[in-house]
Image (cartoon, rainbow, N blue to C red; front, side, top):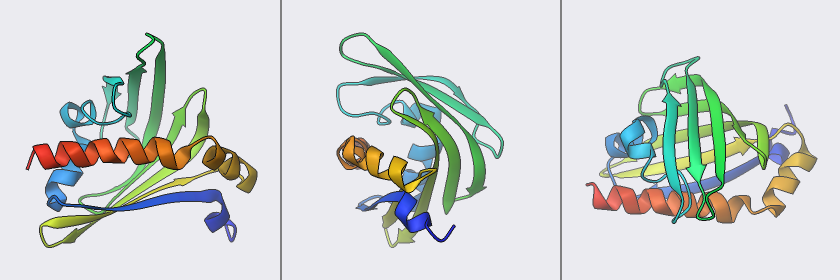
Length: 150
């Protein structure tokens, strides 16, 4: 695992929202469906069992009508601190581990989103395919959601 750093892409963000609200946005289906994709793409929750070993499965409906299914299994949950899940975003990304951490900073939340890939080469490929633009826009949508729901 010494190459973990070279297999991981990370986005750090500070949300101007309290920790409990950011946590709820990540863990409750009725919130997830409002931000879990770039703007203009609707999300349908097929399954969401928020517990260790629980499965989640969402469908992204693209403007052209195509549908992409993302799914995973929760492997670690530390309430109000950390979520780890194995995930597939077929056909673009498969068999990655998403690590999300939350830290209260007064009425704000320090947030870290990391995706661990199986190899350095796969990690580099995902970065080149637009990881930071794609997930950056999703997290911007989350930021908007949080600002509108304080």
